[in-house]
Length: 451
Image 1 (cartoon, one colour):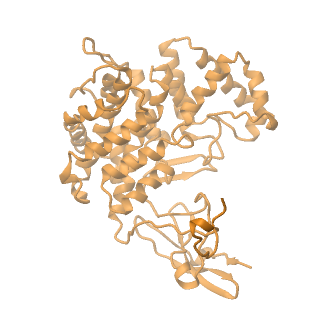
Image 2 (cartoon, rainbow, N blue to C red):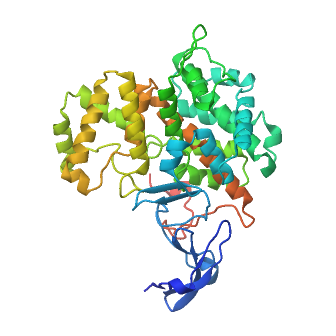
Image 3 (cartoon, rainbow, N blue to C red):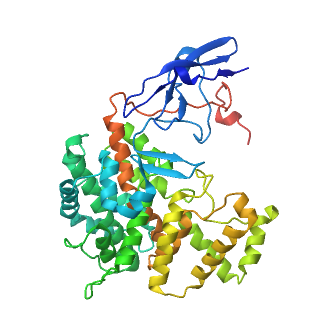
């Protein structure tokens, strides 16, 4: 039998900003052996039993398929309380940042831990402007992709290729150049993303403009034509800025953990970010807002009523999923959804467009918010539901949704990569496993094997 003696609060020491003092207060016992394990408590009272020495001292390891109960690191960047519906970047509530800040300012906050002064913010903006152009030779790389290439495939490959033109920044970590390196990646990823969209449409790439801020510049590169500049509407710019803010970081999710894993091998930032893009590409991670639109399309094309569809969702034998509702982390309302719903309402009112898919989305929202089945199960609309609706209304195609997610998540990925490289006790990540395959077997010559 395995037993774990619960630590007492009197003997637990808390971590503070980069340090992790511990106290041996948790005892694990199994098969006649016992070991005292240190316990770490975060600044928000999260308790973690430190098992770093468990295998060395006992031969045991823990098993946690999917890492749902495993703390892979300590981090100063983002705090989530899924039960209470709380999300904070560096201690600042997401509600305040979304209302009062900008994506560029939030990026600085995530990177360096503090809100910038006016001079620091302007300097960071200048860096973003200075590094917004990609090397002209990368245009030839872009042209090599087939017209139907997925934008996320282009994005990951182009990020890796872009690093080849930055040899001085691939040699190793230099924290004095973090602002410059972050600006290079953030700005060029945005340019690459817009170019990928143009490539898919068979249209010429549009160069960035130095007089436009970050988000407006992206919309310019997406929708301008060689003979006519797109004039971004301030309401659209603000909505997309908020989408980027809300996606800027989300603790140890799949793509962020991937960036940290790759970064632990001392891989350069370009390679680490490209790996994060590949992880985000997975439909179980970054494709949720695409699945919302796919669901709405199926309902519309099938001519099904919203009431009929929702009845199927509640029928467990029907195997029908309601996409964009509920969240693995948030057991309450997704705090980001509250913010983006307001932006969604503003955008739809401003555009005044009639889209049958958007009409269906509004009906689904109304049913879910008043039907006791969904309310009791806390299946509220999440950030993916509203962000998909906004981007569709803005004219951003569905296959670009995950690319938009990636642009927003870049500051978080860079911040985590930096945190890994600043850790003086860091080492290459190397999970263990419990082997369940065949035991020792003798080699069978091919002529003796079953035909």
